[in-house]
Image (tube, rainbow over all chains, first blue to last red; front, side, top):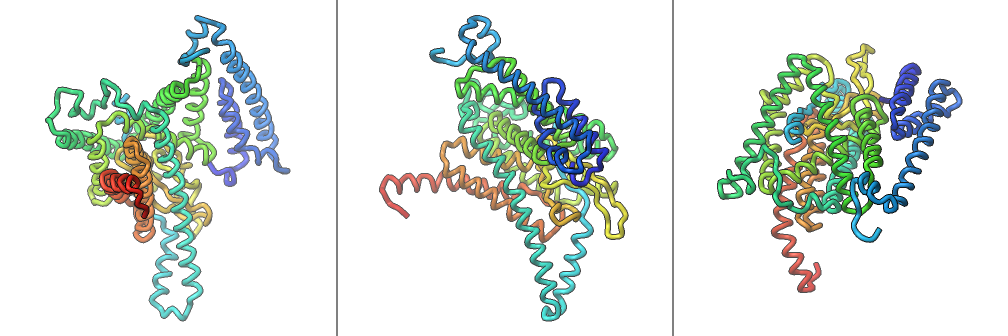
Length: 98
Length: 403
């Protein structure tokens, strides 16, 4: 889809659908949404809905990524300490000293 | 797995000749008959424009093809799963004549030829099924088939590959993290390939899908069989696109009659197509944004074609995903030989073949098979490099002779 040639309704539609698509734990979809519509949302004659959805997507992506990053940090540091539970939720247990 | 993958075989073909860009060509040729002193500047300008068009579009295809091949090469070098021959080696059910089953004819070459005939027969059958489905307007079936295949590739194979990468780098990973990563990657891939998305994201996902498909081929096909299949598919491609009764040709013509794009999926396009209008201003057809799905189109997508003219910067060339896959298969197989000379030689060979094909395309301006030249040059280079040049270089290095 070429953004330059899309009508405003189509832009709003696509931006909105991307926002909705990103709701089930999909920060990557939100990030792509933000990057794609960034110029659209920040130019002087922007469409308010597009800007709104871009902002929501950005905030949502940040929130999801924070939660996700926290989980990864916790897992990597505490995996050994958790013992059996740590092994059960691991897809792969590395060799060598913990 | 293998069943579903092979069932996603589909044709990639281009449709519709572009009417407009040919007009200036013809008039250019018409002018060339007139003594060139008369209007040299116009001739030069048009010719330069045509050349610029050509070179830019060659680059637009070389970059993704190179990227796909580089991904495959690195995957093979880094993820040893593709390199090592696991015991027992698992092969696709389509190649029964291998050293793991009881049914071997004793000679690897005849095994390979038989396997190749089976696979080729399957490819021809699938292509014909697809053409029939297209002819009788069963679009839903085709779309569902392609959707399913890209679904499997984007989720299952991504998961497998990630698992292998994690094992290779000795990195702890839990189910939650990996499932979230695969989930994000897969859903974004499906959206960008089958619906709308930024061009670069779509192209990136197509490249990754092609690379994963190529890796599957490399891992699950026996050695000699793979080379014969490459050759066989290249020959088939030639016939399917150029013969009047070839299935791909029929597909192209049917799509032209109906004035609609052929399978926006399965084709890598370097630019976006939107609407095309004729000089008079009537809308000829409105193409959907060209998405592509994976499907190993074992028929090797031929058509590398110039797109109808819209704005000068929006012209692009289209190349079928099967071409990406088979180029990468060739280079990847060369990479398993543990010698960078071979890899570089095949890499260069394929790019040369692609440039030659595009050159012929610029002259002929019809849908062309993109596989034959590259594959044959690649096979020749592989054989020469592996068995002639490499030993020669080794000897020269040992004897300290520098050329």
